[in-house]
Image 1 (cartoon, helix red, strand yellow):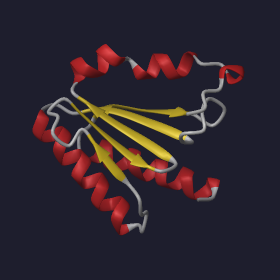
Image 2: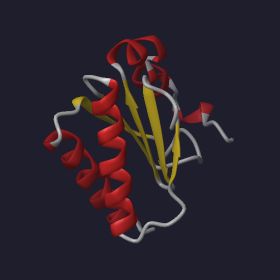
Image 3: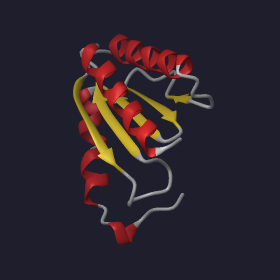
Length: 118
């Protein structure tokens, strides 16, 4: 996917999360930090049902946009979901789990020379 398309998709995902009452939607630029994706979007849901609904809405949107190969992790979890949208990774957490894992801090503290390759 071209960088313009990735940025457009990132904004669309952020909009969908915000429009559906996700809590504290944050984007992290991963371009110079890892090869796994260009962006990570982290958000919280207010309940397990809300987290599930957000993940289903996003998966449906990605499918409609023709983005194949998207995967959902945490299907059986009530506390978190991860959507691997190839160039964008989306984490949706219960607020307590999000605080525990603190992905925003972890990924924002990596400096470019510490680039992670997985």
